[in-house]
Length: 330
Image (tube, rainbow, N blue to C red):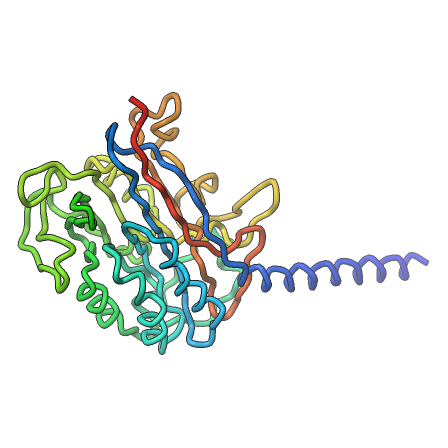
């Protein structure tokens, strides 16, 4: 009797695990758009709609995801922020340029993530549950990173790889930007706080480099934004100290495998689990909350992808985020 009870229990647990995995695979295809309103602009300013896109990990065979990414242009953002990990396959360049093409008609900025530099490799999925799942490998295959970056730059997107730049919105207002290469690969270098030579733009939508304190013509920018792939604390502290009004990051996948009522189990960096995704303040409460006067806004995207080898998400749907930046209440 006891043996039969034990077998029944094991069968039930096995069935529950199989059902959980099946749902987690399904959820990895349930793409959604998160929306936030951020009271960050000076009083009297018109809203700015920012589309934050991160961690696509796109493969040529992911047709549902490709159609969803292509549809995001219908949100009519004023600016696109791409925080990296676009590639999910060695042959993803063509599909990426295809689905991102409509968004590349919009002013934007980008940084790269670790998965934009090297093709994905099979890994033990249990490693993802470690606090910081970095590992050194000598079998990595380089990706066509520069080809993607060149296409972004030629479309007018600002390349924030350890550098500063500005974006001019279609209504003429200017955003100041500072970004760093991927901290997960220790490639991050904080740019110097002085003007440097600009690269120009094929479509004229982003100007020459400028000090974060002002635009090339000497006027103050509408906002000062920080952009980085992985939200390590050292980088968030540097961007806050640099005077940014808001920081955009990705990398965490929102925890990817979350527990209802508990949330993310890991962030794959040293950011706390409570800020694995969503809109927060750094280092303390949000600037619109009591005690948040010394904090900067922080948005961490849960991203839209997974490893191509383990296409699973649980209680953490793949996402892009539309943030409407509005005027502060005077």
